[in-house]
Image (cartoon, rainbow, N blue to C red; front, side, top):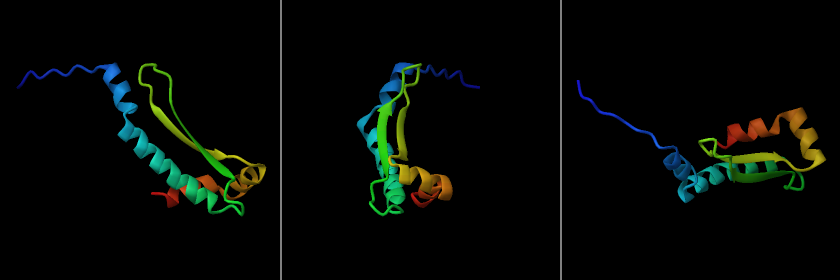
Length: 91
């Protein structure tokens, strides 16, 4: 049996989660969901996206959120589950 030891460094995880390539991939995925959701709207701007890094406790995970931006989108999402459908379409 080998005696390999692995030591994890939270700072390294934090840096990895904020790396430009990781952020770009998450934002690309978020834009696909955003586009799919906005295709259901007449004005094509009822949904919006935000991208930010969470608190460093200790991970600092990167978040991408797609959310309703207008009252029409809020009602449509409540009635038709638009965001869930958009997430399934964006796979």
